[in-house]
Length: 404
Picture (cartoon, one colour):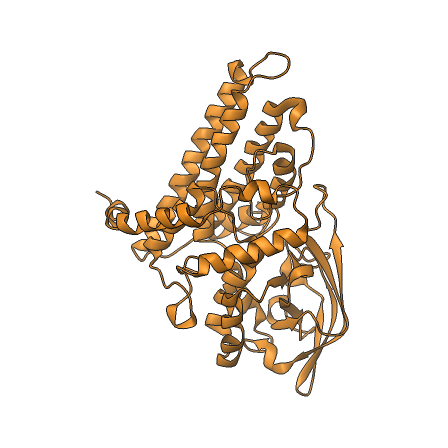
């Protein structure tokens, strides 16, 4: 019997505890309430659900207990996310940066003052954070960023632009990268800051997506003053700090996404078995059944990839390029999955439904899901970047083509 299976069996009482809590606390009608809800209602619901999850320690299970988190073991976190995904509970999308990026960054690189100031506020549900990394012309090649921070005594003056910042219009704070030494090599002259978005000189401009939503924002900074105490890590050492941020966004979150995809497949299968106005049933088509089988097999393969990685972590093994492999595999499978939903849905699927705040990526509103799936091949490192990482770090291929 594998170590992971033994550990999961040992945690069956905890699994029952989580399952029972969800039965008594997850509103049965939350999807109906959020379907078509405006942003204000969606934000209010996210805050309510966050505080509800904080009661048993489920909102921040990976946070140390000394900072107010759940302090759950890695295996307990696996069980928790499996059960949350199984019932289709809301995702804490509004708090993703705060719960993962802020913790992963400040725990390792922040000062005691920064941790004491922000950790309690995050876990109270009062602080929403966003990320200010990407810029026009410096998305995939983040080291090419041009946003400039100039030291002037006890503060920095920042000028530049950021883009694709999720929920910036709802956030109070931003994790910001800026260039502090323009003459240094690209990755050597970058610094990392905590930016208060209520500082004068900041302009936010929502980016309207093809889904109709405005989840992303541009951030314009004109002579914005950031106190030197808001520097995270050493000056010009921001590239190393950013690696802690980027690595924290993967891990257990992909387990939840894989489990949610398995549950989403049930929606896809039910839709395929539903009779259309024409009298036809998509499931009776051989090609549709073949595609359904293919997607189902690939979902199982994704779950095996995730389980293998988590088993290695439980054994204390080092994490290599597996997160990049899983991210690439998941994002492209999600696109094919939702495209099949559009094909099966036919004319009934050719409309956009308002986003379910906190919903998964497979809601059953297939055109909405399909259009948004493309974001997953870009966010968190584009598919092209993931392939480069796999090639260079995993396969040890050279950066430059071999010459004769």
